[in-house]
Image 1: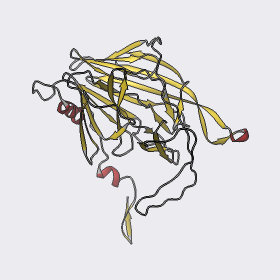
Image 2: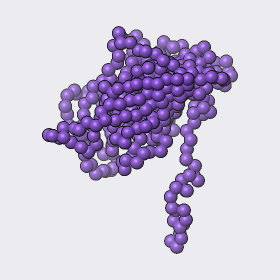
Image 3: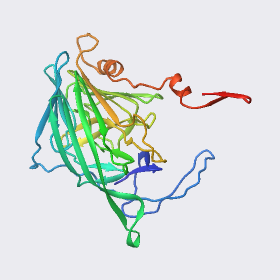
Image 4: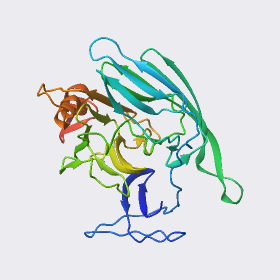
Length: 335
């Protein structure tokens, strides 16, 4: 896509990078190995994708909302016609969601632009039903033309207190991966006072003043990320199985401003053996104000929210050892 290259292995996106000076038009796929690495390649293909198409200025966006009650009551404004968060309202402050109107998704690494979407919104929960067609895996028609087959899934948003949970449910068996490209769950503008991003991928951290950061050609991956203004902070966690790449962030041009957003990386819902992957179909958002009571809002407040509100629940050693047979010595074994 333009000079941005995305690489998939066995149906899962593993990298996205910018190649300066990359020519347009058709080319040839290639592979490069580093540090004496090697692999057996059974299938190598490439394709050129168009940029995401945003809604026209005169397109009507119908807003709907869900809300929590009690302490930290929060209102979440949604796009009624697509699973897109528009903004959050908490304690008199507003945190933005996806500010540019995209209504595209990717199923099995293939862009779907004409999916049919219906929604049912009530109380603190919104359920979107998405249906469409996707290329059938391992099937080809006349002259090797791809065979289309129907897919269906639900996207559910539930708000409890200051936390919103996204769940993918009722996925048809032909869905292996689901991605909502550039569909930010939280975002800030360069015009927002104190706009800031803090992120860490367990190897190195980054801190960016978003009032001056320039737009980036491609998105970047990380594990922990917080966006904040001087008034409100937001953070995202997800069940993506892409270790150290669970969260995506991107600074993008939007007229006379830049927007920086966070969203979950691609969801891998079925493995190579077509078995459903456990707990890989969720994302959570926490929105917070002054969490550490120091009379200001910064990334530290968002980090506390990430730690306390939406932590990742890792498998314990007991879970692992009880899930398979371990050989203790060559005469005995135990389950």
